[in-house]
Length: 304
Image 1 (tube, rainbow, N blue to C red):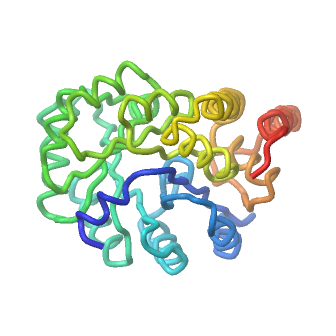
Image 2: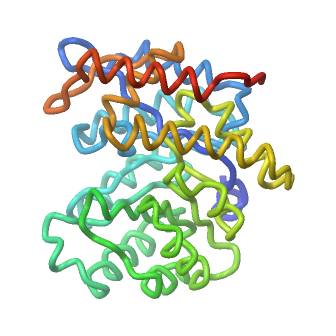
């Protein structure tokens, strides 16, 4: 797909999928394929491989590329394949991104470098993202998740970076609605801002976000797609109801338990979760009961 085509399709609901691991700690490719097969016809706009939900920091470069190859074979346009390729150095991110595109990625998702977070000022981040966009000449999506990285890009910086023709979008996962609105005021028309927090989905879409990348889309895609469609269809009663359900899933599962909670939710919803990769460990039984109860409440009375 061309950059223009990718940008046009960069709207709607995207699932950042989990990476199932075997007991030995290897990727379970069979379980991974099972999940992708179940997403067919779900209304998702695409799949995000090797994002935070996919335990990206614990994946090697070759593992990310293998997941890209598998996903590419199972996705058909206009569904997008977005691959997380953000590493600490610009050089390493550039190399992994090139290889991801060679294996079929439609766009790459590059998180802000953060180990030397005190040095990641506007000059450093501008140099990083401009180098990626200049040399790749393919669609780059910036990934801002300050609660994990400790790096919070200013709306003004994001607006300046958005002017580069190859930087086509931003995944903004802070959950700060005022901050999101400030970003939307700064970026150029046609630039795609995707919300990464279910807590502010409805308000972010109403403010101008093009779509969302939500961990909940991996295990309750019907609720996520339904919420997105309800907002754009101006069916506000339905939108508010589904927003409330998503907020509960975020505040009672994703936020307190992280990937362990999300993988438990996958399993309870009939998807394949596999094991976590150390140092992440499974939740205790009491926490799993909380996840199960939250899911029952969130799905109660729905027909899709």
